Image 1: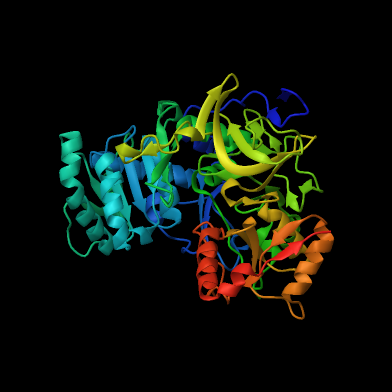
Image 2: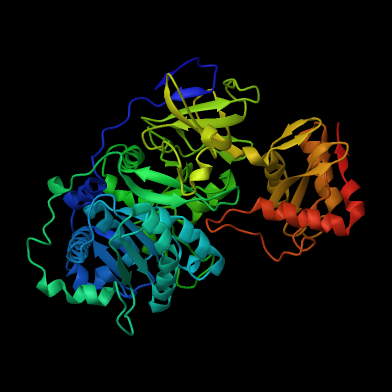
Length: 563
């Protein structure tokens, strides 16, 4: 690990670990290690689901399967199913190499299998949740972006109703597509459910399975060496929500995915984490369940914890629930994953900063730089804007609207160390090289007394009163932005004055703390959440401003906190 000046927040994790040259090489690694090992487990689907497509699995005794057997596919089955489905796509004239596959299906065995197909055929996968098709306000956006600018050769949907919606969107995008390409692009619609009547250009998954018997051995052959890919090919494309402007695409190249996978696994058994890299694997567990047994989770070896700020209490709870697994706080965003980790193993006692657990140190191939408000590299222990770089980091965004080419153009820059991405996160790099992500730059509160980090207030009050709390900044005529804490509800026998008094004694410095609001006051029954489980602070700000408009005295109801 190399550094510039050890007193500055700039750290390099060293050379990138070697990695494969194709996405398929990652999957092939899992096949080579143990073809009979479980590659996919889908608890919501029956154990014989798509058995004709993937073929027989390894023989298991009833004791090994257990009374509540779920769908489990081995690496060999995934390879067999992917090869067969890829052969069917080839018969339908779907060209390999950079052809776009657009999916509107939920996380399922089919979705995972299509990822394998895309790796085998070198297709570019663009994933949307199925509900996007049912939102009519999204149709114009889909029509003007993906369907017009990069027409998909394959579109995958859940049912016939979704297929009809896709046909309507494609019909509207047809004229724009013709103007751009001057030719009719190949198209195959794949419906996971059976089609009630023939639809031009569409087949059902059942239709594909019916063709298996006619496939030749040569068509289904899979030779890892024969899967030639390009490092710069876009393997996956994600789109941002577009809340800050036109939606922009996050292109993950073959090089990005291979490098990230190698980094996360230390160069060993990359097939074991490919699902987390490609699809963001997750597990949802009920807090209490009479059928819960730790024996059912003995195979879970690692838990990657990310999303919002990861606190020491959260890690402790995760270790308590599944003690057999290693809990690993991870930093990740759409643009990059696997930057930080624990090269020498995850310590039992994780370093913390104001209650936030470290996500590790820069891994081989990763660079971090923390920049202060003056635009200079911050000192160790000083919070600032986190910039990162690695082979796993995207190089730029993809803009569907050509007029937005300069949007976010300053998010990337280059210097003598390489290309950098401004993450928009606030981080601290300590003397030992541990990275702590403590908030978002856009959520900083700029008061007349200086910059306030919302997490400092959140961690202080939540730890003391065992409540979930979020802090937003709202404008004040005399104090700049003022931090307003929001709680779901006040704890029993605890009021606003109690929480403010504790905060004064604990912090011991001057602040201008606004009224502590509750979700009920804001007209909310629960925290507004994104699809990835993050609290939407913009929604809290909007609701808080509306509440204050209806209750003018609250605007001036702030408390000056000082020694």
